[in-house]
Length: 335
Image (cartoon, rainbow, N blue to C red; front, side):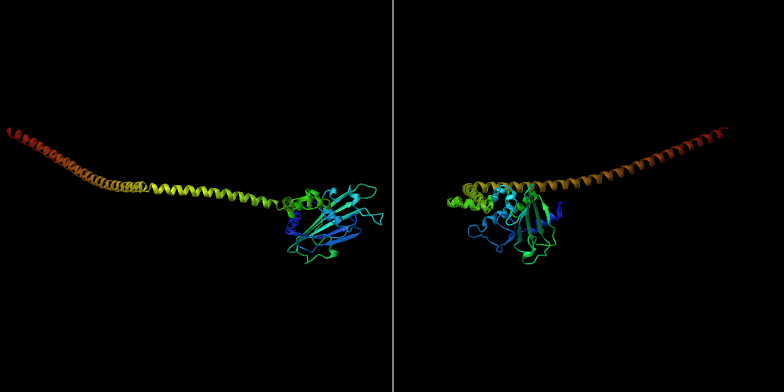
């Protein structure tokens, strides 16, 4: 037995508790049961506990309530000491009830045990122990000598009531703080029998935890009704729109034709604009070519002018030189 909390053990408990059904109840010195008594339930459906008065039917139900952590008021007991069977013994100081749940399919199992330790001359206390088996080592059934712990490999650990409550609520949908949702006391049978059919139906739905399904169906029916009303209004609007379109069909056709003409005009404008841009591009290219040719011709003319000026300058200089030479020759002749 391991007392500290272990997250892996919690995960194993949750995994082993999937699809569980009550398989057996083991009572040790609990109330009218002296020694160990094992009640096995092999049915996977509704379980009925029948027997004559005083056979222990109520004690069996109270033992289940005790193991699941219900308040002592559900067991017709004032304190824990009142739960211990001391018949024929002076040393009876403890009792225990174990509930063994087995998976409807597969080999998973869960055992919940509550022990009441109530010495005659000291304070009483109780403790919870749980074992969740997910190792797959169980056979098709649990033997008597294995009870209350169905598996000799998985650990048994001490649990607080809050932990047990959370486990039962999560895996078995049992709220131990609301025993009226899964336990019907014998004292309540008379009042239940006097209920009207509708009240009995609501009671059964609450007890079977299916009331939320009925409320869900009613909510879905209301939603379907609203959707049908919306669809009817939408159909009426569509009919009016079709009638309006039929009445305004010529105008709509003319508008569509006008829109088509506008689109064609926009397309023609676009084509004309692209053609104009093409012509302008070609004219600009020719202008650039003519400008380049003119520039080339101007440069050639400028070069020819400069060459002509150079030749004229050279001719003038030659004429001056010739004149100076003639002048020099005439002077020598006069001498």
